[in-house]
Amino acid sequence: MATVLNINSSVRTTGSLSRQLTAEFIAKWRQAHPDDVIVERDLAAEPVPHLDEQTLSAFFTPAEQRNAEQAFAAKVSDRLVDEVAAADVIVIGAPMYNFSVPSGLKAYIDQIARAGRTFKYTETGPVGLLTGKKVYIVTASGGVYSEGPGAGFDFLATYLRAVLGFLGLTDITFIRAEGVALGEQAVADTLAKSRSAIDELAAA
Image 1 (cartoon, helix red, strand yellow):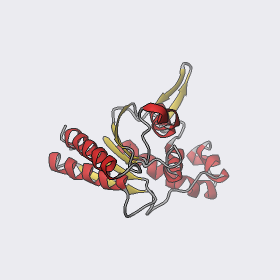
Image 2 (tube, rainbow, N blue to C red; image 1 turned 60 degrees about the vertical axis):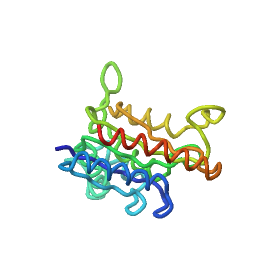
Image 3 (tube, helix red, strand yellow; image 1 turned 90 degrees about the vertical axis):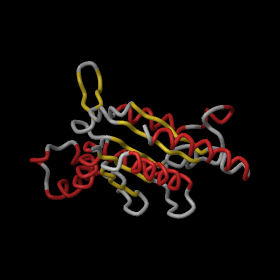
Image 4 (cartoon, rainbow, N blue to C red; image 1 turned 45 degrees about the vertical axis):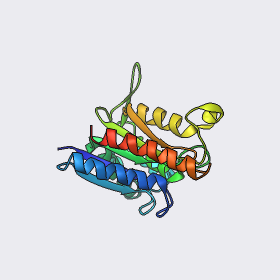
């Protein structure tokens, strides 16, 4: 039995392709792995606070030395870190906003990127601690950015690969719904391709 952490970051609670496809992925996963535990994290319904001075100070203060304000500020991050550390599989719905990730997802990553908790510094450089997990990332974008002239504008996939890899999450598969602003046929084609990938990956 595995624990699957499902993270949605679209600010749209209706009409979101990334949410729709992520839900389809989870439904297929449940069919193939009925005993797995699914943990839901919705960054629109329950926004994660952006970093502030108090929280950052708490991160660099040993838990036993934190004052009351620092202890309170670190609670959200501690809970999120415990949650992601306990997951065996992570499914992230990440629509592309202005060539990158939604600000809510960036805030979430800032809360879980913790020295000593999710990565550590060594004499040979930083080492990620969230190892041995599989990550699926479902993206949706108006244009095509996986290849062609738009590839240089894809700061979503490059950022997520880099920052999640830094934390030890290196086994990442992207499921892309691209070109959804390019007409009905483009939408139909990309959804068919995404659903084919979901059918194959969720059943693995």
